[in-house]
Image (cartoon, rainbow, N blue to C red; front, side, top):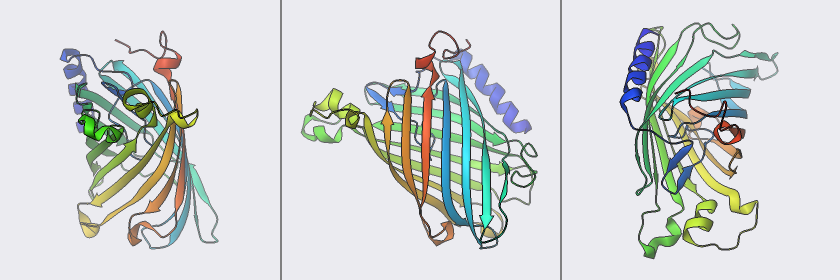
Length: 295
């Protein structure tokens, strides 16, 4: 993990010299939601809980039912820099065999907002995510560590001309990261994803108030594409992932999301799963205490 620590230290130095960022993922009038399968481009003081259920093939080709309960906490160091920590409690069952359950490895992350253009609703961030090998249960966690330098971007379409007014609530986000493992026998991967969103709150506030009642006025329909491409070893070139259509209800202090998980190809499985999220924005719940940056 030496490279991870070096990059984290470098990020802290850069953050002390950089202009201030924004709470949440805000670029002009655009608020990018905290999407479920693909991490958004912003930072904030946040607590995220998710439950996932899916049936997918393991390395031996057997179908495995996987239930996951995850928690992730993010804390801003400066208005442009945040770190995160989280883990999953996972239950796996192969056919009629006994279930295997336990905590996965502890995950750590750091993210820095590089650039925000409010007029064009654009945001760019960079970060590093990693798992600490051996920190989870022997049944679920791995003995090796991983780290993944990652780039995040988001773009809203509020700058479209008047003739395309009804397209202004659309936004796209994307991430791409190269994951490396401390064990040379473990294949490296290119983890990438994107989302397409249509914000009804944006429609109501900045395009035209069409009179949607609550809770409809707080909804954001979204489709996420979460993919991983193997880049080394015998699996090199193979890609797996899910397509995740769903809906997000967002308020100032909390959001709730529900998505289906549809396998992107046969290697990813044949059964549709689901993902449920509850996400708390501490920077709006506790703005004067734990919800503000350390510096």
